[in-house]
Length: 324
Image (cartoon, rainbow, N blue to C red; front, side, top):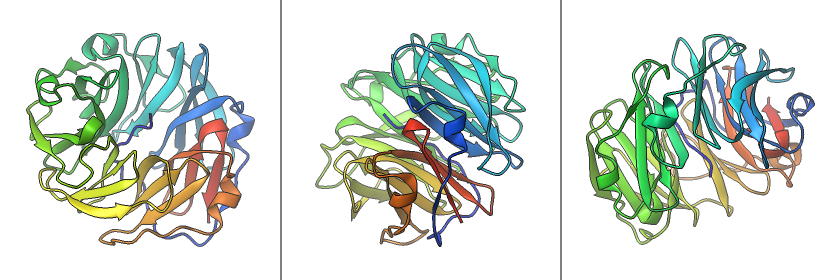
């Protein structure tokens, strides 16, 4: 399950061209899947874990998105890295494994494991995470497709508190994605479920109003003007408040594997090395003609980040592509 989060990651519009980048694959084997990438103003940081079995999660950093250095972390038995954010002062990363994992770092090279995270997050799997402009982070997920759970931190991941209200708003449903618009948190999930919260733990149930309410809403972001969510059926919905939703058609490919925010542009990914871009305020997706060749049609893109000049897209099998 691909996680989604609110991150303003530098500039990002319809890009002029894409090139294959092999630097990440020299640090991670082809059996490793990337959980997320973020730029902190000085370095890109990628979190990754083995796709099967047990292993130690890793973090890989780069100043240019081309040459990478890998650091083994305290993420033991973390086979499914969910995502990574930069709070303004430190990185925070989340993973699933034999237990749910959290670690934080101010440098990207030396990491501290948070033992209390697994206690605060009572679900089996974390599926989504988001952050505010400060050090508040919320994660959502649950057990299977029916049990809802959430936890939040106000200090960048150092300590966590369990949500007391989200489970009652996702009855027989599970939240899969979460985003923040500066005022309201919004979570979407299985069977078209949706809830909003004006604070870190005051969730209220809503309904995504469309002809595809039965579709699981797997991915969610805020693009600076509207929430954008994509279902497993590739249908796209938008909302300015998380309460009233409108249809924006479908992605130009299926299945969808995630959403990222690069600047004010929404990046949507497809399983066969596909990319579609929705610029701010637009209702039309564009598909860069050189991306699939650069990324590889046998690879699945999952996340992207930009340093303001270069955009880096990463995915499974340690695949990576850059633009320009």
